Image 1: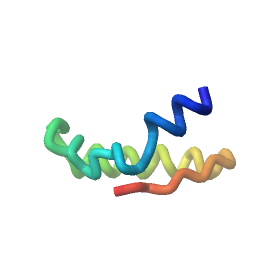
Image 2: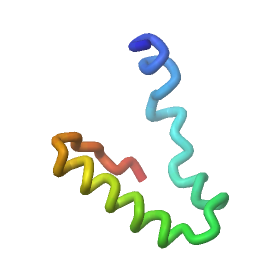
Image 3: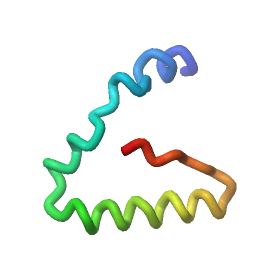
Image 4: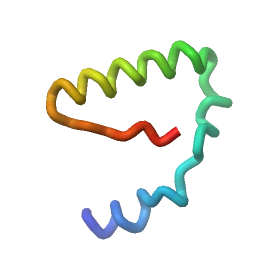
Length: 51
C-alpha cells in the first residue's frame, strides 16, 4: 500500500484545481471542503490544502 501511495499519489500528479471545472458550484464546494478539513483538524488529522 505504501508503494502505491508513493508512486500514485505524488504532487506532480495533482490536478491543481482542474476538479473545479466539474463542480456546479465551486465556491460552495470549497467552503464545504474547508469545513471538512477543520473538522478533521479538531480530530487530530491535519491536512494541508494543496490548491
